[in-house]
Image (cartoon, rainbow, N blue to C red; front, top):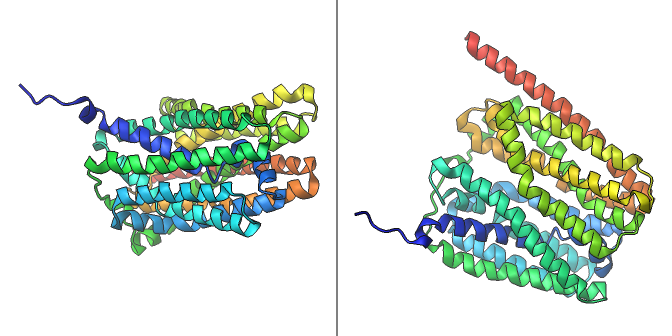
Length: 419
């Protein structure tokens, strides 16, 4: 008779993944709270649209610089300690922001979040998730984590929205939300340290990038094309956060109603988008094909919002377009890095390729929020039109890059077959 396995031992990976999913959303929800509470957060902090864009741009720039050294850190330090530090430090920074400091203080907090959410967390979290099961169930583990992140996001966001609506003064409501999410993040940090104590965090050779790996990857045109495609849909996804103030300012929706719609956009669509796009990609046999379809639908939605007259009777139409756009962009996010395999990038370059693609793909974080904030500040409602136009133009570039990548793959296959 075999040894009886306890419920905890059998589902330990699921418990750990659930905890990481909740922790990830709670922690990243602090520096990205503008996605749900853009206008209340901006006014409570006493910032102009341009200043708010500057603050978010600073966070993006620091994150951009932290991706590579974060991988090195994850390979050389205890993963549990890094995760625990990330959660607790991020929570403390959230409590500091709840005090509504000066503009300089706000900038320093967002810059510090770039360190605690990326340098000590991003690569470490991926490493921990990969260590929760064998190679045969990696897709299952990462798929479940992605879905649970959407579920956790919806739960946390609706609790936050309820807390926000409990008081009539928006600045006080936002303070309570910041305190709630900060304390939750810190608590998850402590619990995760205890739960993960029995998990063997294994090293992964493909995360240990060498100079030779980088030089080799730089010579692969597929990597640059995939990075460009990721950059295009990521910039379009970054524009989603500006639809909330657009609805509030132009269509006179209340902050609470905008918050509810934003939560559905940010988390509800994410639960289903990735699995749906993944299944369709498998059925078609090409993630690149689905990227093209995604860009086309996204462009149609953006142009639809751009040409829809700003009138309260058109509110529902804009909300529907926004939700479809979010579903498509989160679906593209779910399959974006799957293009690495389809692009015939050599297996030994997989880790370095993912790192370089991340740097290329997330480069909008370094400049986009500054530009968008300046547009809204200087042009008002016309500033949103500029955001929509830029998104549509970037979507067209994404289609061109996707077609170029598809043709390149065909040439690589043809050369391989004729060799």
